[in-house]
Image: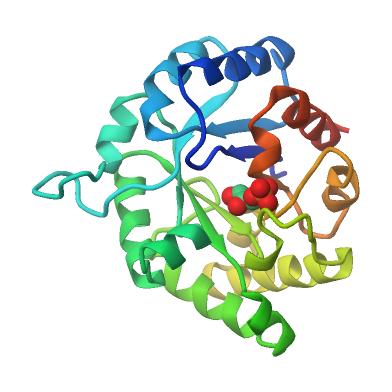
Length: 248
Ligand code: 13P
């Protein structure tokens, strides 16, 4: 049985004072029945991981370089993230694909690096509004899924996050039928590539304007094993009810 996962992506938000939100979640969720992951900016990983050291909450990163070390000014490698206390890393978020021209091929290389460092890769996929309106969603997801996952990917070392670009930070969400269609499709493609049994191990997260108000219905949707939450993960008073909805 897959263990559900509530993941928060703080993006480029948060300074030392924001660690109070991590502390609050540690206090509120001592023995959760789902996995909880918080991905603060890299500057806060060490301190956040320290706060979560005796808690079930995992701290993750938002990106890594594909190489383990070298002349890459400003970049951070997967072994460095693991060394600083991260247990997971988000890869291929649409903001990285768009703002940093990241291709699915590069995402796959980063996933190899993450796996080698013992990190869970949270690989993001999602269509643009134009692609959705052009009925290309499943084609886009198929292409991104195939190219972003390296051989050696398993449900233990990788989580898939479906995040329609047009739903991120907009307050818009796909219909539950649309979310279910894509999640069912991802599961079937994973089955084709890795086998039916292995495909069952993958957690499939939905991301894009998840809030306390819509979390329960999204979590009741076919093949949705949790959420990757942006804005509503920044405050424990918003993220905590989303975690509770997943536990229900
Ligand atoms: P929002 O929840 O703010 O829409 O962001 C979703 C997201 O991009 C998480 O990675």
